[in-house]
Length: 385
Ligand SMILES: [Zn+2]
Image 1 (cartoon, protein in one colour):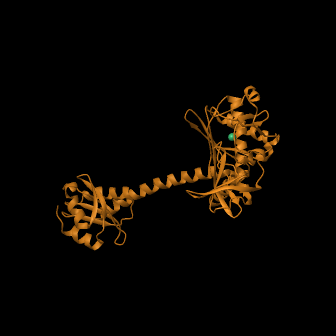
Image 2 (cartoon, protein in one colour):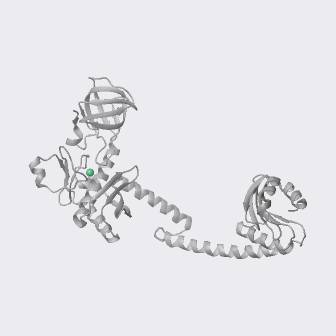
Image 3 (cartoon, helix red, strand yellow):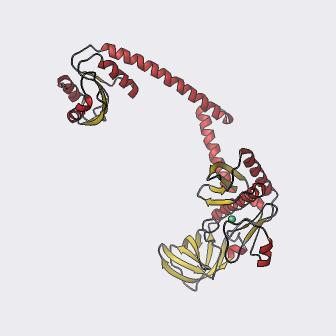
């Protein structure tokens, strides 16, 4: 059995220990120590990383009371090494996890909802509750959580005797077997949890609910605390500052500026559509009527405009009307229409001649062609479907 230093001192980030076992594992080496401050994953909190002597600790697991450190190098059995956790990461995780206990304790106390899911991700922590919470509720929870931080309450973690445990109400996700470890924040929460926590709630820093969405009949909250909340706040601030500079708008006026911009965009879209139709009418009128085929290259229209042009040209020819957009280098997109021939039936021949692919309805087909403009023009002047 490894002595678990993280249970007695959650702020022990460096320690000395003797290697009791070292063997090759699937990903490097599995090292056992007589004592360790490395927390193995548990209670939703990921495993610590860091160093033991010259070796990098990538992951930590617990197997029947033995703590196995997954390292990139073997270590000498019987030798004493100094261990060092990645302290900043561990401290941030404790800020988030203790903050989660404060929020979950408040949700449970105020609404009676259970915490039914918990995930500590790379850049956010998500917590699921068994009931729904409105905007007002969330604001209240966030305010009370930050008041609990300000009150700098002591966080106690201990293994109670069975008699004591029987008397104490506490939150727990599952029926626990073996010794139960409780984490208590007076007046706020008491919860079974095996993870290391801050010593006082003041250490948690800011508790920020970032998002809330309905999830499986309850609620999923995204929460960040402490330094992670600060980093997130900075990122959002930079993003708003960039938008505000781009729009020449005050920071608290960016949403109104974006709304204005969208309104302008919609008006422009309408204007472009109107002008396109005028262009289409002009382009169609400029084509002389013919018993053969009509071909137009790059009329400067979008797909809708090109289709409108084909519709008008169809009235002015006895064969088919075609609009091509693109270039010899990048290839051509085509729309072909006809009042007189079944284009769907002739699509195969057209695609073969123009080295293209595409299809559609009897009166209109569209696709892409790899032939050059010169080849296409020569083909259209000759072909009769
Ligand atoms: Zn916990």
